[in-house]
Length: 175
Image 1: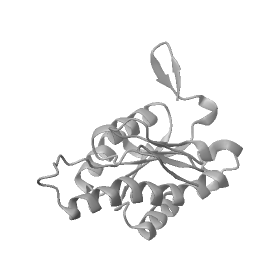
Image 2: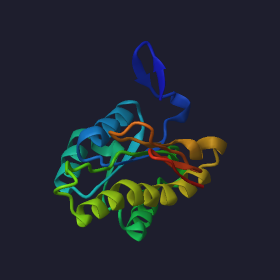
Image 3: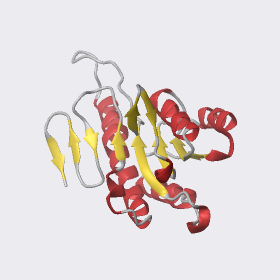
């Protein structure tokens, strides 16, 4: 999305389909709402079915709700393949916003291994699962650099994700 006069707009030439994780609430919901307001079709991914139902009710036919746990790579691949627009739809998948994430407050005195495994499974593995399933679909749209329209949203500075490289705050680099 390009910045213009303090507001975010989506170029009409790229209005297409976007996958948004964590779309049932918070940042994910706001991102899905914004893309739909700009003329995009949004595939809203979340485990919160009630939140997805409310979002679908609010946004109508330009939103496809997909209740899936992003920690399950096979389920993500199946859900995104099922939500992929038909070739004659005119709105191919061109972007992914990874907004799903959890950040429970803990300290060294009270954290549990299960809590941190869950954080890593959702925030890192889930992002990788969604991106691995989405990038081939984005590339199939045939728009060259479109595979770089993959975004990671989060509360921690220094994290971002593209179709080719994952950089996690703290120095982990995967290609």
